[in-house]
Image (tube, rainbow, N blue to C red; front, side):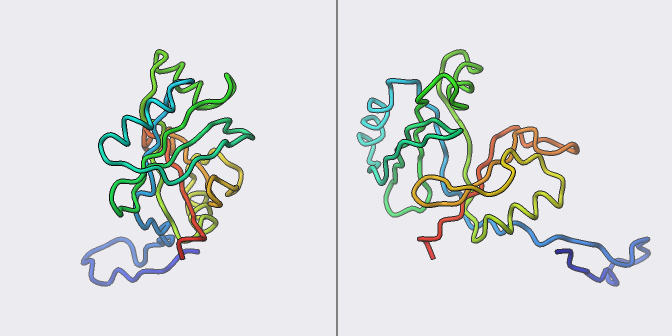
Length: 170
């Protein structure tokens, strides 16, 4: 919903008011997702454990995602590493690995929000290129949607972003 902000402190301005939409309410970086090649997930988990990470969650996700994920945490930080391994050739993660010459690497960055629906409406109102038609169930009981790397006509992010609402974190 637009909020009117008076601009009377801007001298000689041609604008009497600016319309600003409520920002999406990013709280913090929820996770950094790393794509790993099929069959390499357990080796990657062991490597992260050797440097002090601990496994918090493991799940196979079907549907359009087709991945096996492991969430790792260092210390008490809310910022996680998400390792994602494709379960099929149709997985978007496998397609990304293929585009990357058969190598894994950065898959996306996840931002935590209080309300995925409010954030979705913000990005939609601002004409961002949203991959999902609506927020949807994610892993570990979250609600998520993705912003395309070619996110906007004005300027692209160049990175896939996931917006994450975690109702259990309230």
